[in-house]
Image 1 (tube, each protein chain N blue to C red):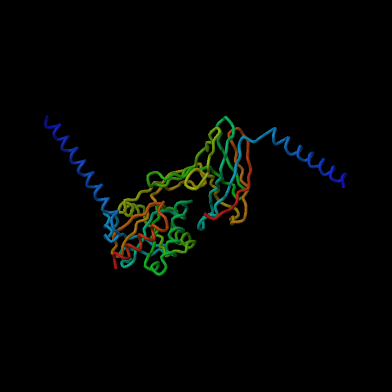
Image 2: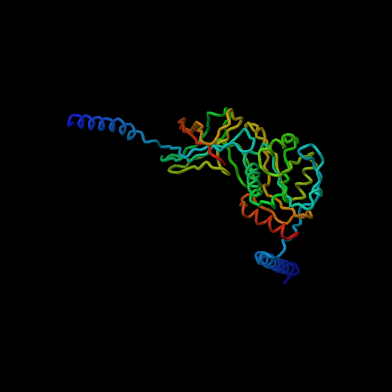
Length: 147
Length: 203
């Protein structure tokens, strides 16, 4: 029994070292969380993807491209209510401030997925990759939700 | 005091008086809900083409409360959001919902043919008519309702062009007069309350 416990303890310590060492060495500067894709509205074959992008580093960064498993035409967009006039425009960059957060959300900055290949339903996930201006990419599973 | 200075002083005084009157008038409006809704100086009758390709006049809707709004079927966000919201409004109105019809006026006549509008509206549980016309016809209606739109080329985008447009919903009473407008942010509750007031006013 004692031998078994010792072995278990040894394994746990080894496992802990294996897991914690690489994590401590390279804490990610950019994290993407709460990613979601809106279930396409009406009969539209396009939709938006949203997420919270955090930059823990001292250098501002920006999303410069995105890709998604259900579309080959993914663009960065801004939606703006400009004195009652609703404007949609493609943008080249979505800025993430140093030690700051960019919230991609409906009615604001977001990722547009055009010509959707497979219509996503709630409960499914879409693989979403964001590319940053230094070339790094972050891939996340975005949950499909109703508007 | 020169004549010029006096004129300026008189002008300033009249502006202040006008401002006081506007403030007073808007204070009155927030008074008891029994006041009838004002008739807004916008809107009016028009003829367009409906989603079956037939001529459609606003005048044919007398006796109904009509919700007019401008949009387009490739609109990625604002229009389907509004249509979904109006579908919820209709459900919430219960029996009164049968007295309300939505007119979805396209500001993208190039892409929005009657069948395209019909297919778009089929996705929403809403008594709505999609309307289109020539650019000239649509521009006239846009102007009547003090709405606005702008075709914005986005050649680098899969959308090719987007249409910026106002998102106001105009509530027209049973006599064809605009009585209320709802901003994009208006809640389902606000719209339901507004429609019930218009129905009560015309009872």
